[in-house]
Image (cartoon, rainbow, N blue to C red; front, top):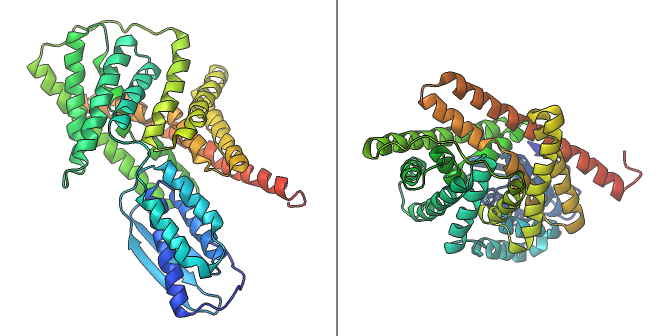
Length: 422
């Protein structure tokens, strides 16, 4: 819970306090829906309240937001609301952060509320066939990062294209909820096995994992670790539990689809995966940055930022891990990406997450956890526990790098703006 003292600006009566509180509730819900983590959401509401002349204490978890809003004269209001499911919409988050910076006068609350409403009514920048094409690019690039060959890139991309299209369609059907990952992963596994028969000399498992990467909760795991590290225990444990539940649902779907396809079709003959030339990984990483624009709903103007963040993360990870191991490599890459995000925000006044999310997604261990769950379902306990442990360790070091950058970058920026600050 975050708390800041606010200066006495002007008397605020009960009616004005009620209006400010309602606006802050709507703002908190909008930030949550757009993908703001719990600790940053709380900080944003405290700062917004301070700019509007009230003192705010906020407490946010994945499905719940509590606000205590106190006027300078002593009047207080307490609001509790249930939060809906969230998604990442960076275009909306850019506008919301700009709105938060512009808050300055409680007398203009109606204008702020109108502006907030217009922001939430904007259509996402990517949808329909554009998002489906992004699914092909995303899965093809991930297949390359999973050390697949040209066939895996092609088949993974095709599965990813159909996976995104089906996900968009099924998401409109009320009541399916948790069944969607199971259904889609089962179909993806069956399609991967069928493509392995039609197009041999490939690994159907790599194609299937790359095809379902859109739903893998690797970044969710990293955010959960950072929330736990900032002592937002309820939000962190809730998000962590959600990540593991999604992994198990997807793993169950993959296992079901694989068994059905093996019963219906002849098993594809195992062959060695044709390795890609080393230089292909770099265009694949840049392509991943392009595809992530659709995943996080970032504006097209963020294209060079997203691709550059992915390339920076991969370059730092490759250099450091070659000398000091994967754990130190992941930490150094997360630190570099997170610090670059703060520098980007300081220079452009746009959210640091435009850099941080693509860079961290390049490093997140979602596919590692997915393979671990699949190994457990195949009764390979040693491999499954090892992969899941490695996933947690990687997620932890990514969160540590992110938190260190948050604190160090904020301190350096404060010194830059005020050299006498200590």
